[in-house]
Length: 234
Image (cartoon, rainbow, N blue to C red; front, side, top):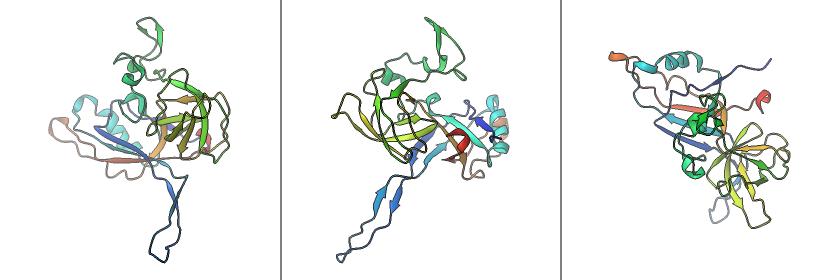
Protein backbone atom coordinates (compact mmCIF):
# COMPACT_ATOMS: atom_id res chain seq x y z
CA UNK A 1 0.00 0.00 0.00
CA UNK A 2 1.41 3.38 -1.02
CA UNK A 3 2.09 5.93 1.69
CA UNK A 4 -0.31 8.92 1.70
CA UNK A 5 0.98 11.89 -0.26
CA UNK A 6 -0.43 15.35 0.54
CA UNK A 7 -0.38 18.43 -1.67
CA UNK A 8 1.14 21.48 -0.03
CA UNK A 9 -1.61 24.03 0.83
CA UNK A 10 -1.26 26.69 -1.89
CA UNK A 11 -2.33 29.49 0.48
CA UNK A 12 0.82 28.97 2.57
CA UNK A 13 3.17 30.84 0.27
CA UNK A 14 6.65 31.40 1.71
CA UNK A 15 8.07 34.91 1.92
CA UNK A 16 11.53 33.53 1.15
CA UNK A 17 12.61 30.20 -0.24
CA UNK A 18 15.73 28.45 -1.47
CA UNK A 19 16.06 25.10 -3.22
CA UNK A 20 19.46 23.41 -3.29
CA UNK A 21 21.12 20.03 -3.64
CA UNK A 22 23.41 18.98 -0.83
CA UNK A 23 25.75 17.06 -3.10
CA UNK A 24 28.26 14.43 -2.05
CA UNK A 25 31.99 14.50 -1.46
CA UNK A 26 34.49 11.69 -1.74
CA UNK A 27 37.19 12.02 0.90
CA UNK A 28 40.60 12.45 -0.57
CA UNK A 29 43.97 12.87 1.05
CA UNK A 30 46.21 15.71 2.16
CA UNK A 31 49.36 16.19 0.12
CA UNK A 32 52.80 16.86 1.54
CA UNK A 33 52.24 20.56 0.92
CA UNK A 34 49.00 20.45 2.93
CA UNK A 35 46.59 20.69 0.00
CA UNK A 36 43.26 18.94 0.40
CA UNK A 37 42.11 16.65 -2.38
CA UNK A 38 38.45 16.04 -1.59
CA UNK A 39 36.43 15.43 -4.75
CA UNK A 40 32.78 16.40 -5.28
CA UNK A 41 30.82 13.52 -6.81
CA UNK A 42 27.20 13.27 -8.03
CA UNK A 43 24.77 12.57 -5.22
CA UNK A 44 22.77 14.09 -2.40
CA UNK A 45 19.12 15.08 -2.07
CA UNK A 46 17.10 18.18 -2.87
CA UNK A 47 16.66 20.55 0.09
CA UNK A 48 13.90 23.17 0.37
CA UNK A 49 14.14 26.00 2.92
CA UNK A 50 11.14 28.29 3.52
CA UNK A 51 10.51 31.37 5.69
CA UNK A 52 7.00 32.78 6.25
CA UNK A 53 5.47 36.17 7.05
CA UNK A 54 2.64 36.84 9.49
CA UNK A 55 -0.73 35.48 8.43
CA UNK A 56 -4.17 36.68 9.52
CA UNK A 57 -7.23 34.68 10.46
CA UNK A 58 -8.61 34.44 6.92
CA UNK A 59 -6.54 31.42 5.87
CA UNK A 60 -5.29 29.82 9.07
CA UNK A 61 -7.16 26.52 8.73
CA UNK A 62 -4.46 25.06 6.43
CA UNK A 63 -1.79 26.07 8.97
CA UNK A 64 -3.78 24.50 11.83
CA UNK A 65 -4.08 21.29 9.79
CA UNK A 66 -0.45 21.33 8.75
CA UNK A 67 1.11 21.58 12.22
CA UNK A 68 -0.55 18.29 13.15
CA UNK A 69 0.06 16.56 9.82
CA UNK A 70 3.61 17.67 9.09
CA UNK A 71 5.62 15.22 11.19
CA UNK A 72 6.51 12.12 9.19
CA UNK A 73 4.12 12.87 6.32
CA UNK A 74 5.02 13.12 2.64
CA UNK A 75 4.18 16.32 0.78
CA UNK A 76 4.26 17.31 -2.86
CA UNK A 77 5.45 20.90 -3.04
CA UNK A 78 4.96 22.42 -6.51
CA UNK A 79 7.48 25.15 -7.29
CA UNK A 80 5.36 26.55 -10.12
CA UNK A 81 2.68 28.12 -7.90
CA UNK A 82 5.26 30.55 -6.54
CA UNK A 83 7.20 33.01 -8.70
CA UNK A 84 10.63 31.60 -7.95
CA UNK A 85 13.58 32.51 -10.11
CA UNK A 86 14.84 28.92 -9.76
CA UNK A 87 12.12 27.65 -12.14
CA UNK A 88 10.68 28.94 -15.42
CA UNK A 89 8.57 32.03 -14.72
CA UNK A 90 5.92 33.69 -16.86
CA UNK A 91 8.40 36.38 -17.87
CA UNK A 92 10.73 33.64 -19.17
CA UNK A 93 7.86 32.13 -21.17
CA UNK A 94 6.58 35.51 -22.42
CA UNK A 95 3.14 34.80 -20.90
CA UNK A 96 0.64 37.09 -19.16
CA UNK A 97 1.14 37.53 -15.41
CA UNK A 98 -1.98 35.56 -14.38
CA UNK A 99 -1.61 32.72 -16.86
CA UNK A 100 -0.07 30.21 -14.43
CA UNK A 101 -2.92 30.48 -11.94
CA UNK A 102 -5.66 29.96 -14.57
CA UNK A 103 -4.83 26.35 -15.35
CA UNK A 104 -4.93 24.82 -18.81
CA UNK A 105 -6.90 27.07 -21.21
CA UNK A 106 -10.11 25.41 -22.43
CA UNK A 107 -10.58 28.12 -25.05
CA UNK A 108 -9.17 31.53 -25.84
CA UNK A 109 -9.37 33.61 -22.70
CA UNK A 110 -11.19 30.90 -20.70
CA UNK A 111 -9.59 28.84 -17.92
CA UNK A 112 -10.12 25.08 -17.83
CA UNK A 113 -9.65 24.77 -14.08
CA UNK A 114 -8.68 26.69 -10.95
CA UNK A 115 -5.05 25.93 -11.64
CA UNK A 116 -4.67 23.44 -8.80
CA UNK A 117 -5.48 20.07 -10.36
CA UNK A 118 -4.80 21.03 -13.97
CA UNK A 119 -2.46 23.96 -13.46
CA UNK A 120 -0.42 25.07 -16.41
CA UNK A 121 2.97 23.38 -16.44
CA UNK A 122 5.34 24.06 -19.35
CA UNK A 123 7.16 20.93 -20.50
CA UNK A 124 9.77 19.80 -22.99
CA UNK A 125 10.82 16.20 -23.75
CA UNK A 126 13.88 14.02 -23.40
CA UNK A 127 15.65 13.47 -26.73
CA UNK A 128 17.81 10.62 -25.44
CA UNK A 129 17.98 8.00 -22.73
CA UNK A 130 19.78 7.76 -19.40
CA UNK A 131 20.46 4.87 -17.07
CA UNK A 132 19.85 4.83 -13.34
CA UNK A 133 22.82 6.52 -11.66
CA UNK A 134 23.76 8.71 -14.64
CA UNK A 135 23.47 12.49 -14.39
CA UNK A 136 23.23 13.75 -17.97
CA UNK A 137 20.67 13.46 -20.76
CA UNK A 138 19.78 15.14 -24.05
CA UNK A 139 16.62 17.24 -24.02
CA UNK A 140 14.57 18.57 -26.95
CA UNK A 141 13.90 22.21 -26.02
CA UNK A 142 12.23 23.21 -29.31
CA UNK A 143 8.88 23.81 -27.56
CA UNK A 144 10.40 26.33 -25.13
CA UNK A 145 13.83 27.20 -26.55
CA UNK A 146 16.50 28.67 -24.30
CA UNK A 147 14.76 27.92 -20.97
CA UNK A 148 17.15 25.15 -19.94
CA UNK A 149 19.76 27.09 -17.96
CA UNK A 150 22.19 26.12 -15.27
CA UNK A 151 20.84 26.96 -11.85
CA UNK A 152 17.23 26.12 -12.79
CA UNK A 153 15.29 23.13 -11.44
CA UNK A 154 13.49 20.68 -13.73
CA UNK A 155 11.42 17.56 -13.20
CA UNK A 156 12.04 14.23 -14.96
CA UNK A 157 10.54 10.85 -14.21
CA UNK A 158 8.96 11.85 -10.93
CA UNK A 159 12.16 13.42 -9.60
CA UNK A 160 13.38 16.99 -9.16
CA UNK A 161 16.82 17.92 -10.47
CA UNK A 162 19.16 20.91 -10.40
CA UNK A 163 20.59 21.84 -13.80
CA UNK A 164 24.37 22.06 -13.39
CA UNK A 165 25.43 22.43 -17.02
CA UNK A 166 23.86 22.85 -20.46
CA UNK A 167 26.03 21.95 -23.48
CA UNK A 168 24.55 23.25 -26.73
CA UNK A 169 27.68 22.88 -28.84
CA UNK A 170 27.39 19.19 -29.65
CA UNK A 171 24.27 18.42 -31.70
CA UNK A 172 20.87 20.07 -32.02
CA UNK A 173 19.56 18.93 -28.63
CA UNK A 174 21.48 20.21 -25.60
CA UNK A 175 23.20 17.78 -23.26
CA UNK A 176 21.98 18.64 -19.76
CA UNK A 177 23.89 17.66 -16.61
CA UNK A 178 21.78 17.43 -13.46
CA UNK A 179 22.13 16.76 -9.75
CA UNK A 180 21.31 14.43 -8.06
CA UNK A 181 21.72 11.50 -10.49
CA UNK A 182 18.66 9.75 -11.92
CA UNK A 183 17.14 7.16 -9.61
CA UNK A 184 15.64 5.11 -12.43
CA UNK A 185 16.18 4.60 -16.16
CA UNK A 186 14.89 7.53 -18.24
CA UNK A 187 13.42 6.81 -21.68
CA UNK A 188 13.39 8.96 -24.78
CA UNK A 189 10.24 11.07 -25.09
CA UNK A 190 9.54 11.49 -21.37
CA UNK A 191 8.15 14.82 -20.26
CA UNK A 192 10.52 17.29 -18.62
CA UNK A 193 8.72 19.77 -16.38
CA UNK A 194 10.07 23.32 -16.28
CA UNK A 195 8.08 23.88 -13.06
CA UNK A 196 8.71 20.69 -11.11
CA UNK A 197 7.39 19.45 -7.81
CA UNK A 198 9.35 17.86 -5.02
CA UNK A 199 8.17 15.01 -2.82
CA UNK A 200 9.60 15.75 0.59
CA UNK A 201 9.14 15.67 4.35
CA UNK A 202 10.02 18.07 7.14
CA UNK A 203 13.29 17.69 9.04
CA UNK A 204 12.30 19.75 12.11
CA UNK A 205 8.60 20.22 12.73
CA UNK A 206 9.03 22.13 16.01
CA UNK A 207 10.77 25.04 14.26
CA UNK A 208 7.65 25.61 12.11
CA UNK A 209 5.14 25.74 14.98
CA UNK A 210 3.89 29.12 16.16
CA UNK A 211 1.31 30.11 18.76
CA UNK A 212 -1.84 31.96 17.74
CA UNK A 213 -1.70 35.62 18.73
CA UNK A 214 -4.43 38.20 19.31
CA UNK A 215 -6.51 39.01 16.22
CA UNK A 216 -5.76 35.48 14.98
CA UNK A 217 -2.26 36.32 13.82
CA UNK A 218 0.36 33.65 13.43
CA UNK A 219 3.86 33.60 11.96
CA UNK A 220 5.04 30.12 11.04
CA UNK A 221 8.70 29.53 11.74
CA UNK A 222 11.40 28.44 9.30
CA UNK A 223 10.79 25.08 7.68
CA UNK A 224 13.32 22.78 6.05
CA UNK A 225 12.04 20.02 3.78
CA UNK A 226 14.26 17.24 2.44
CA UNK A 227 13.55 15.20 -0.65
CA UNK A 228 11.99 11.84 0.20
CA UNK A 229 13.00 9.01 -2.12
CA UNK A 230 9.98 6.69 -2.08
CA UNK A 231 9.73 3.82 -4.55
CA UNK A 232 5.99 4.33 -5.11
CA UNK A 233 6.56 7.85 -6.49
CA UNK A 234 9.86 7.50 -8.39
